[in-house]
Figure (cartoon, rainbow, N blue to C red):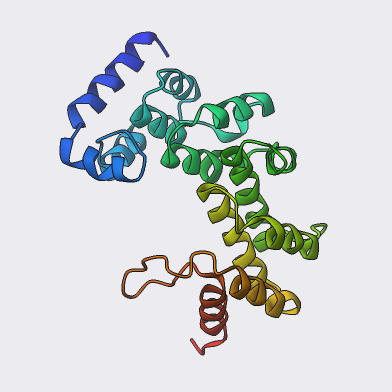
Length: 224
């Protein structure tokens, strides 16, 4: 792809910029004003274009980076490239899409999970915990689940927001998926009280782990 193509896409994104959308997004730490439905429509039209994705990422623009993550080929990125991208991902949405849409599909996911979980940067560490939560749900064999609960119990209460949220998700996932550890997971949540007062819209499940675990287990057991 030529530089012109990146420029054309950037012009299209600029034309979609909506000041009202930007105000809403900035409340969540995301500095762009492009409607995500329209962004996905562009991605659907462009299809997979790895070099274009790299060019869009290199602009540093949040909307362009979100689009890059939709049109890239996840398995084409090297381990060090993904590590650098995560550390450059300044906004929550770019960070989340990079982990969920790209890193989780990468052959380097497990190696990065281990490295990131131990990283001193709490935002990087939160990505490691997100990958751990994915393994708890889909491929728990080989994970020290009791050991993970030990770490969560010792560190989650005082962890920075992004890391705390990721650790809490892992706590809930262990409780939901693993009946033998459910009572302990609920007990940790009750003692730490993390996210107990989080504002939850009607009809949604609270992220407070004891409530989250109990509700998801109830749904799984309910007759269809």
